[in-house]
Amino acid sequence: MRLILLDQPHPKRFHFDPLALSRPIFTLRSGIKTLGEKLEMRFQPQTVAWIVPEYMAEVCRSQTLWPVNDLSELKDSNDDLLVIHGRVKAQGWEYDPNGPSEVVLDEDNQVLLARVRREDLSRLCFDTVELFLRSLADNLPHNKYEIPTWNYIWELVLANPDELRADFAALGRFGIEGEVEQPVAIRGNRDDLYIALGVRVHPMVVIDVTGGPVYIDADAEIHPFTRIEGPCYIGKKSILLGAKCREGNTIGPVCRVGGEIEESIIQGYSNKYHDGFLGHAYVGEWVNLGALTTNSDLKNDYSSVEVILDGKRPIPTGSTKVGSLIGDHAKTSIGTLLNTGAYVGAMTVIMATGKPLPKFIPSFVWYLDGNFSKGYGKQSLYKTAAVAMSRRKCSWTPAMEKMWDTIYELTAPVRDEYIRKARRAAIG
Image (cartoon, rainbow, N blue to C red; front, top):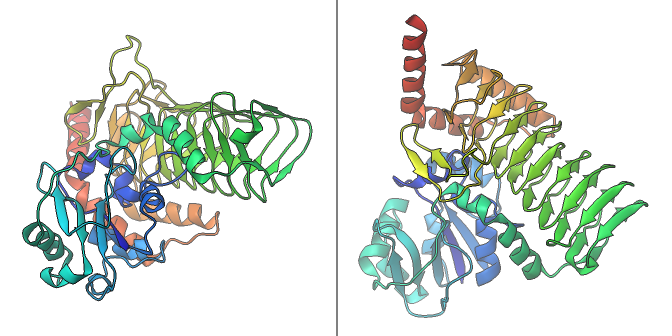
């Protein structure tokens, strides 16, 4: 069986912004694994393929060995196909992938799941992605299942503690393979701790698994006076620098984390090196949070947090605890205070104002002196991105620049409106 992980443009795709601006939804994290990796773990396919928005396809090809938007691979397949949208949860529903061909559509008539037996491949059109998906809906028997889905980006954060526990159990790894320098205090059952090969845990570290498991991945480094509370995942080559790592955190690869962090997800390659609080937040890649950058994740009246995703209307989250959603390549100055449920767009530059910032900050803006502006433009942001990536031995490529040019255009209407309003307010 070949598993096809699906993510295509859709009016509701922005529900996963700003993180999904620059990556497929199924590469988002919750727990130890990404959403796509969880689906792979459940269905155990022989091979995988990706279908993603075309503007990010070339970048995705550099990030996976699986074919991306290559329909010829699917047309010539000798396997059954199982197409699953990246929003589908890996667990919580029953399904037999070996049954007859069928398709399941969501409330917007978009393909949520499709099973195609190899003898039925000839019924499909493989000319374009759009025609392929349409032929699934038009030519396969329709069925209805109660399939649980992720609907908003903050749901990944709120579910993170439970996803960490489930992933730890599914992986079945425990024990200490890396280097642990004494004295180190491990509280709780050591069967709930996994320290991978290549990890270095310095002296004077506390790892507390009484509230859930802790998984420290290969080549991570934990500096003295760090406290890690489970459930928690520390990604490959990440460094914790005297951090107060409270429960419920997922820290992706090659991050630098200090200060206090609680029930948050960092996608990877980001810096929160200094003191400051990050709670119930989702942070993208190549983000730098300046010293004492802090987000609020609880309103003073304990009411449900609302998040603005489109720059216009607030959406109730149904939770009293939601912090910041921070897109890739965002940069904050020292002393930045992020509001409860704040949306910080990708490629933003933020200077502190001494008070909580607006709840919505568009992508590619410079927030200076309390105003939105274009700053020095996107080319300046690209140069900064290239420098930041080179510090982790990664490259800013022409394919990335092309993708980000498209993201710049996609986010332009909201950004331009905010800048116009700021100019009108400055004039008087």
